[in-house]
View (cartoon, rainbow, N blue to C red):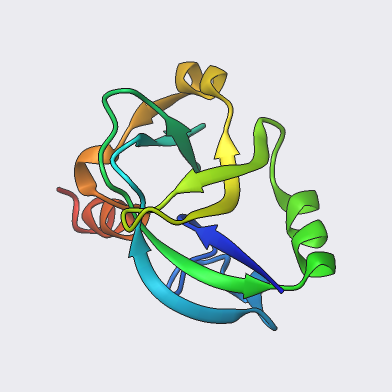
Length: 125
């Protein structure tokens, strides 16, 4: 089992969470302030490293390697496994967005996380 950071549509309460069935939730966590969160193509969350980054809310899971391979097949082109620094200094893997995805999205980092951003959209704020 590998520690893996989830920050978007696979989080608890989000529409893709069923994709984590069989993974073990460890804890709610934040990234180090080295990332920005983008909504790409009005649909997909992308965590992208940035010098002007902020902390982003996320969840840490333990996921089997074969399960991670299945998740990688679901990810759209432009998202790749890479190391993420957490607020407490640990480093874990996540599906990071390629910086080129910025051109197809908009920065939603001001919401501090995907769930908060999606909730604000549902409320119309």
